[in-house]
Amino acid sequence: QVQLVESGGGLVQPGGSLRLSCAASRSIFSLNRMGWYRQAPGKQRELVAVLVSDGTTNSADSVKGRFTISRDIAKNTVYLQMNSLNHEDTGVYYCKAAFAPRLGVEYDYWGQGTKVTVSS
Image (cartoon, rainbow, N blue to C red; front, side, top):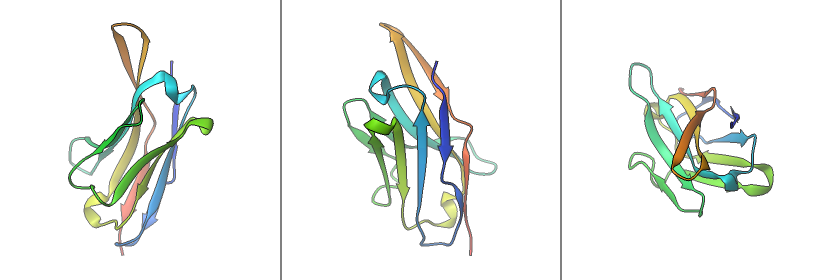
């Protein structure tokens, strides 16, 4: 079982920055992957960025060069630094963790989401 708690969302002007945090209830070393997803109003949830347990990262083309996913192992926390925000970045941001309690079995866990609104 993994609990995830996101924080850091809010209202920001276009061009501004925010940093989201996702605190996990267990060591993030034990998680195969952690990722950030977002869901804009009226749209499907989409992957924003992912961080694999070996430290490899990847992100959606729409956020490359603007968003950075990182981790603090000591704090069991994954971050999403978002710069140069625009209106299209508005949505609810969710943290997801993939946990494999044993070989061949993997479960996904989601946080409750944190809302990001980009508006002037």
